Every structure is written in structure tokens, then in C-alpha cells.
Image (cartoon, rainbow, N blue to C red; front, side, top):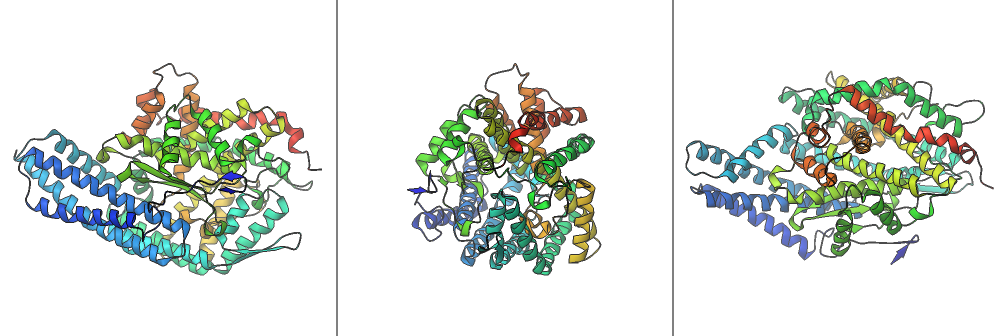
Length: 594
């Protein structure tokens, strides 16, 4: 099957995205049977090591089935986002998961008692209990499941249903008209390079969210209020709560912040440079609508113009660090775990999620033939590869978090960037790649930190009471000026309504993970230039990501202390690589289409 000039891979018809299929219903029944069996067996209170270890195995298999069912719901939502039956099924799975969680807690309590009284002796049970207690003190200082299920998940669904019900109208310079949901229009914005078109798309999006801002404001107040309530119950600030979820200490986080803020003047120079290339004679300030845009007259390099070709390039880019990435791709193809159709009215997207009952990872990539989508594909496949590679780690020991997945995803992007610069011969293609490197630089190191700061301010003000649209807009303008100063001509006023990150049902902060992951990837690449250790460093990186606190990933492999400011300055030096090279291609930047 062909579409837009590239092969369309599709998910297996085994029922991944069809919640009425026999395959899904069988897994659902296995899950329910597992819960019933666990309830019965745990009531007997095993008195020997073998019985205890069998109970652990059954519990972990049932937990894997829960994750599998949640991934199936996510896949179904991708195909039919407006179907409320999917949200109802997801809530039903979460309700059953609460029962499973209660049974797990009862088993943990009994095991602790049995081990203390020496009712039985089992190293496996002892280690399992230690890991459960440890992950419990970290993650569910994350959100209480009942709050997530009863309040935040429905609010998150409401947010997307509201966005889906809005029609945004864009009138293009040639008089043509496009009407679609904000998600579809936002995807169009991300993949449009022509300046006048981008301005019209951006302005239409802003108008749509301005007209509906009151409802988004209500949802945002509810989400932030729930997160604040949970953090306060654990005697934590919102940031402490978020860092705890990612298993990283505040000392390392502060070290990144100090190093990063010292380089902010240099980062603003990058934005001014972009403005000078895209602006007009009267102003070098970059219009907000053009923030992150490609150069309209430079096309996508030929070796990135299809999904399959991009996979081939990516395999070569990561081969030296992750030689078994090809094995992962082959398994994805054979198992039909990758889907590349364009669903949801062209809203775009890319994600991956685990199918632990099959030791597989489902991947969705809505591929378009442009550099931006090629790098998003690399990121998603890097994330998926991390998850797949760590299936060998005992389930209860895995510590995967958003930050770790962002680290490996962005590492794949950085390896792709450097590989493309090394193998691309045409100067106009090199210019396009370097320009994309600058786009990623300002997004990861200026725009996303701005979002983090805005969220911080929203939480701080929300703790004092309800926030009006006017108050949120005022906070947005203040934070925007703090970061961008005079480098951007206007403000992305309704970013707090447009971005779903502000409404995340699990994480109160869904932003610093991107910046920290980006800098961590650059830190690793800088360190690899001088690395003389074992050749299987990629395997070590993946294993430590799954098993240890974030600081230990770098300490164990590279003997690097990420709590030191100077370390992150090296990462920033590496990240600024595109800025140092692109000035050699100025003639291609200013070259216009014939």
C-alpha cells in the first residue's frame, strides 16, 4: 500500500486498536482472571518460598496485562479520538487496576510480616519487596490512582474533546480556506514553512483559543488544583513532587538551571540570528508565528523523503552506540507493531507505548516528508528502543520515567543530526539540516524552559485561589518577556490553552524533561568523544536507565557528576554546534526560490 510516496506500515489486525476484537477481549479476560486468582491465592497467605515466588510471578503478569490494555486504549484513541466509548473502556481498566493495586499492597504487607517473622526465606521475595517499597515511595508520591481516575483522566479527555469540537478557520493568501480542529491546524503549522501561511495559521489558532479560553481556563484550574492538593498531602512543593516522579535529585536539577541561565544571552543571540534571516528590513525580531519554522526555499534532503529511507539513515546513525537497534526494527516489522497512517483528520502525532504481555512496543508515527518529522520519528523510535531493550530487566526493577525516555529519544535525534552532517554532500541540504539544529536548540533551551517557568507561576498563583483568563494571560506575558526579551516580536498568548502538556493527568510538570533530556544527550555525546571504556556502552546506558537514579546513569558509565554546574556547560557547548557551523552557508539561507 502506498500513500504520499512512502510505505504505510499498519498495526497487526490482532486487535491492538480494536477494543471489540477477540484478541483484546481475551487479554481483558486474562487480566480480570488474574485479579480474581490473586485475590484468592493471597488470602491463603503463602508459607513457603516457592508459593510466594509464584504469587509474585502471577502479580507481575497481571500488571503487564494492565499496561497492555492501556496501550490498546491509547491506540484506539489515536484512530478515533472522539469516541467516548474508548474513554469509558480506559476508565474501566483503571478501575480494575485499583483492585489490583490493593491486592498488591496486601501481598507486600504480608510478605514484610512473613520475612520479619521468618515464616519463609526467599531472596527473590525480599528483593521484590524492596523494589516495590522503593518505587512506591518515588512514584506514588506521584498521583493517587483514585484522583487520577476519578478527576484528572476525565479532565484530560474533556480537554481533548473540547479541542476536537472546535473548528478553526484559516484563510490563506491565495483565498483558499481550511477548516479543521485545532490539533489538525497545529500540525499544519508545524509542517508549513512559507512565512505568510504560518502567520495566518498561527493567528487563526490564537483566535480559536481566545474565543474558547474561559472553558480551557476552568479545566486548567481544576487540573492544577488537583496536583497541588496531592503535593500538599505529601508535604512537597510541586517541583519536589515532579522531580520525585523522575527519580532525580534537586541538586542535579539546580546545576542544569544555573549553567543554562548563564548561557541565556548566547541563546538569545541564536533567536536574533533566526530573526535576521526570516525578518524584514525594519526589524530583526522574530515573529512568534515563525518561531521554529524551516526555511521555505530549502527542501527536505532526498534521503529523508520516505519513512523507510529515514529508518535506513537512522540505523546507520545509531549503529556505533546501539548496534542492536536493527534487531528491534526487524521485530517491529515482523510483529507489525508500527503504524504510519494519518489518523484524526491530519492532527499528526508520534508516540510509543509498551505491550509488555507480548514483550513488544507499539509505535505510531504520522510521517511527513520533512526534516521535522524525520527527527520526531528518530525520537519516538529511540524511546521505543529503550523500552524494548529493558524488557530483560525484571519488571519490578524497571525505573523508566518520562525523563529517561526523553534522554534516549533526544540522543537518537542528536546522533541523527551528526550523522546527516557527516554524510550529506549538498551544501543546501547541509544548510537545511543545520537550520533544523538551530530550531531544536531554541525550542529545547528557550521555548520549553519558558513553559516550565509559566507552569511554575501558574501553580504558585493557583495556590492562592482561582485564576482568571486575564491572570493567566498576564503570567504568560511576564514569563515570555523574561525569557525572550526583545528577540521575538509578540507573545504566544494562548500557549497555555493550546498545549496539552499543561493538562497532564499524571505529571504536574511535563516540560523540564525535554530540556534536561536534550542536554543529557549532548552531555553524553561530548563525553563519548573521549570515551575509552568497553565497546558495549549503549547496552550499559540502557540498563542503567532502567535500574538506577538519574545521577547514577552518568556516574556509573562515565564517572561524571551531574550535580556540578561545569558539567552542564560542556553539554551546552555541544548543543550549540549548529550555530558554529551554519555561518558557512549564509548564501543558501538568503537564497530565494526562483
